[in-house]
Length: 388
Image (cartoon, rainbow, N blue to C red; front, top):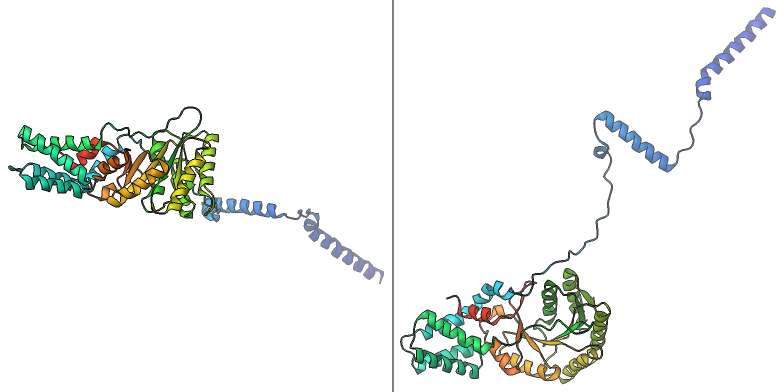
């Protein structure tokens, strides 16, 4: 009986020892610390790298692509071409619409017999080109005298005579330079004026490009506060060439905007401040008085060096009426003729200069950003009468 008890006790001990030996590897292993989210991510990445390496693939091939936010669009600053020589480069564009006038005149002048009817036809051709009746008559009379004296009918000689007469009327010796240099530290100040629809705001933007291309620093003043789109348009033009813009909310006082623009131009030491003004009908006395007020307010800080009147070259006699009223109110110093590429009436250059006594300084020869060109009389006449 005692043997049975001993055997049972040994069996129990054996079972306990065996169980301990079986459980020892698990009990003896230290429990890992609790995983943090970062550890889990790192471990997952590490495991992915190992698995990818074993599979002969890179992590980039297995792991999902990282989402990178799209960069904010940046406007690349452009370097416009200089103003000098622009009209020569754009002459072909001008010639497409102007040579009809020159060819008609050359054909008439080359006739074997130039009687009174022929000279009257020449005069009518000049009038239809918006030369004005007085100018057309003077050109026809001068040509008639020279042709009779020289007795020539050679096409080359006739062309040269016509060129000389047109140049004389356009005034090759007129000062067409823009006043961009001033004494002292203040910037040159330009006001751009005109009726609705002539392209004043676009002209301001293109003029800014011309001046930047000539190495000037420019500030644009958005004093057309009747149209919010005008200020937005100026900012677009300015951002392309790195110019500054001063604007206020729609409906703000235009004189206040112009005043602040000149003030900032002085403080930031720019070379030129261009003030865009709202379009206004020349028949609206109140609006014309407001334009005079803008000029007077600006002059409290700095002289206005240029008042550029923007005229649509296709408006003819109506454009001349506009020009006279603006000249009386703000003392126009120069004319910008837009849309000159779309008309065969380039004679308005002669007429507007004769009427106002101020030169055409710039011409718009297309819709591209660099299609505003300083006016060059000889290149213009060559375009009108065509190549020899």
